[in-house]
Image 1 (cartoon, rainbow, N blue to C red):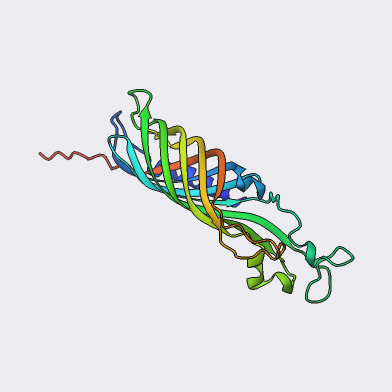
Image 2: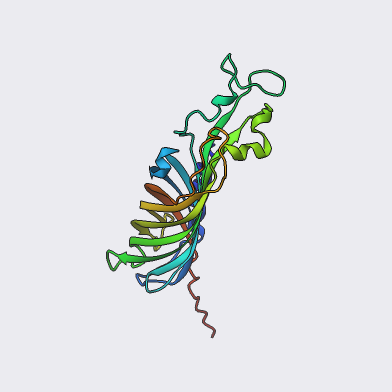
Length: 251
């Protein structure tokens, strides 16, 4: 089974053990969750990569005022690379990249990325029945990194092994800001607690390599980049509701 799907099923199964509360009052409670999303690249990021899948974790605290704070992180993965000609200078007359045995080698590249942010959010309830659910707005900011993962599988291609990969991976880091708007549902009694919505992310990043081996005569830009992503997110919550007090009577 696909690992992200398996994790979602686990958290969906686990939620009933934590998400039990009665009443319509807004509550203070810690919340953790897992989410999946997709993102379309824009601005400078779109020159390198296309669509990303994103999986991540959230851990925070929701106050009785329906404000919330916390941390969230996403891992990005894709096979949509727009860069071309990365290894053209390594290709022989037969159109192959030769491994250490003198045989045609296999070289694969995958976009990878990660961000880790702190967030502040506000929930706007839509009715009095459940004041812990409604429109959720979040603002966040933190650290961002993206690069190319280069794999040679069972081959050894000396020209792109170990530190030589750094000449091709386009390592880029910097700060990012992100905005999210969607619907958040913390179930008063049932098992399904979730949220879903749209997000917009802006990365203010810089190239961290000093040379690209596929473009040795072109200086690597030191200008600030604008790496944009626009996408959706669907997540499952595990809210840790306080246990309701029990009353005992003695004769």
